[in-house]
Image (cartoon, rainbow, N blue to C red; front, top):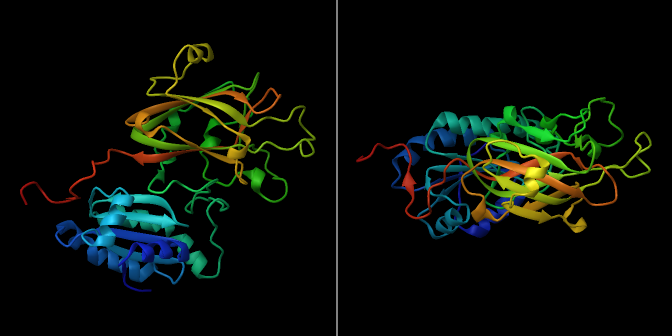
Length: 337
């Protein structure tokens, strides 16, 4: 248990991200009133939750040379801003000096910190098991400076066309590690993936609760090998051609989609799939600003089969509105103060 560590160089911060499983960073400035107000509360969190090489709380002065570079790198546009890292990846950003918001974000990690500190094993990125109240499983690292915003999906409006009726569309957004990656065969009768039905095409309509900026799409597909697929007539394929359509008021029909120019079309190569069966698809960021919905159209699969399988899907980017870079603003003061 210790006070927050003051970051003096970018190298120091980079090394800390590698050596400490969890890092909570407070981006502040001496002239920022809300920064000063929340500082004692942040110090209390640090003294209560910090553990050597596991959970580290730091302060980054955005007026220092190193702080300016880090603020630019992580897109800090308002002060204070708190960023929570796990295994060098951003898991949450909190803007403003509201103790309740900061506490809620940090408390999500408290059980993981306590379990690991007691001798438990904290899962590494890309191989952890996401359970309720813990850290979500990730099939691949997050792009630096961006977060998983899948929680902003309005699950009530999700719609998946041409899916086998044995599967639930909501499993695509599950935070748990796919059963296909667990050792041994799952004893559960509930399938935690989706497959197409009459052919290899799928049409996923995904609305968001608020406007978002999408940077990356991550798709996990873990079809079994022929040797493992003793109970199935056909081995499903991984997606190959993906078309994305943004800001549609509802899902598209398959014929309708063929007549509309997509926002982006992506061809997934075999080399794009990592050891976790996850492909990280970079989006043309300028085309995915102020997004309220996205349609993911799986046009075909990689192979000669008739079905496509998807285990997980993750939307990576920024939720809500982001201020333009320039002069940093303090959050919490009334105009004129």
